[in-house]
Amino acid sequence: MKLLVTIICVFSWTIGLAQNREPEAQTLLETVSAKVKSYDNMVLEFKYVLENSEENIHQETRGNITLSDEKYSLNILGIKRLFDGQSLYTISPEDEEVTISSFNSGDDNTITPSKMLTFYEKGYNYKMDIIQNIQGRKIQYIRLDPIDSTSEIEYVLLGIDINTQHVYRLIEIGANSTKTILTVNSFKTNQPLSETLFTFDASNYDDFYINNLD
Image (cartoon, rainbow, N blue to C red; front, side, top):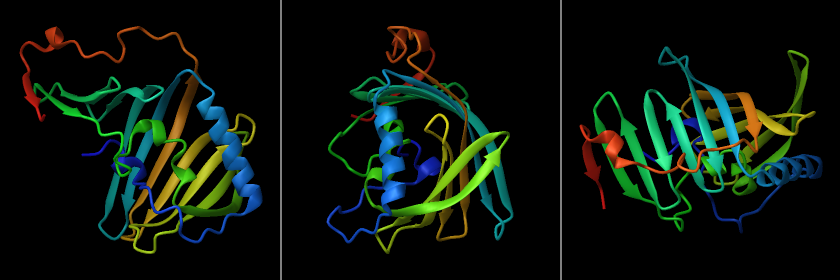
């Protein structure tokens, strides 16, 4: 499983395809992207909702993630995923198993959490959409339409907090009538982090089965 595919389901497409990007929307997205890239680290808590009315599916879960450059530590659905810059460790306490795999930075289709807040930079046309007032916060939505006509994504709505210029909510509508909603409940930056936060210590998992895929 590629990390966060089920959360954001975004891919990199050929940049050379025709693009139709509204200047106002592009300016706002570039501002958000520049701000995200300026931080040494980010600590996010989020809520993830999956809905499909045709299949009578409604699932909710919460998670948290700490990011620093390409490194990250993600906790969701009782699973911890740790990336130290070279290897990805998927730790399942329930199964008492650790899966280790290498990371290919040249694979454009590999989705990492570091792309979670900047995925829109490639593969989409976009334009300004509605503004919502959510608990006193002014959220400006931008609609993103995939350039690739064969995409499994119909469109994405990206909600940006105008005051903080941070991504607040991402709503993805799939071609199969599935809706996924990712809401950032807490967004902290430049936090003091342990030097070993992104380091896998095998001695902590002596009783676990180590599944090394390489």
